[in-house]
Length: 261
Image 1 (spheres, rainbow, N blue to C red):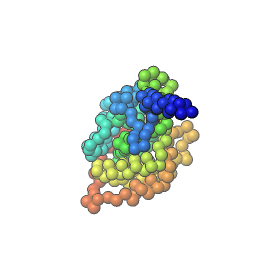
Image 2: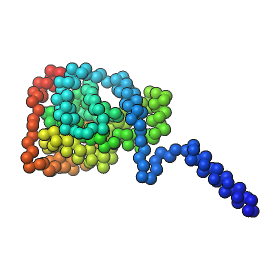
Image 3: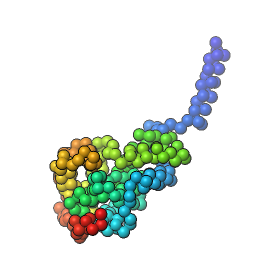
Image 4: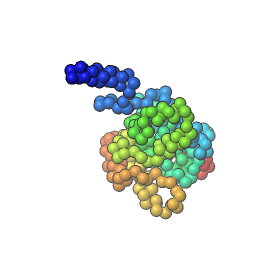
């Protein structure tokens, strides 16, 4: 009996040693599941390739006219930055949306630019997307939805279907309430630092909520985040420094959009 017990203990010891060398858990208490910067960049490039197959991209000359004045002010106010941010403009008037993928990439649909009243509203939306990057929400979401092993398989195999699914996952509004709330708070703070009143973002969501029902069923609208009323109230009530003064963008917005999109 003693021999069998010792044999069982020996087997268990060897089993534990084997697991230690061959099994890598997805997460451990007190640690974060991470995607390396190199793999994140590679995956971002695969996602862009997929998006280029689905959408027409505006060239840099248009991006520099309609997006760069806004993004430059935001990024000048964001120090330090986790990423070297890159902004792309996609041609789709039926998408009132902007979304972030990986490695600092942010995509804006032409439908959003035609919908916003002014560049200050756009600044708020882009600040929110930057917040998802800075808070690590995008990598965290992919890890939770797919897992590191699936992402690694996509990178090595280049599965077109899976890459398309990843793109669609990031394009959809699937962040949890905590992530959305933190991205909102990040956006308000960055807007203030950039001399843009956070109330501008509330005006955008108010307009979107009021006009949402008048659109055809096939029009995709960004307003699917939870607690929209609370988000509007949050933007309107965000405390401003006593010496805060908004600095409006010197852009003829309506003419700029009409002549370039």
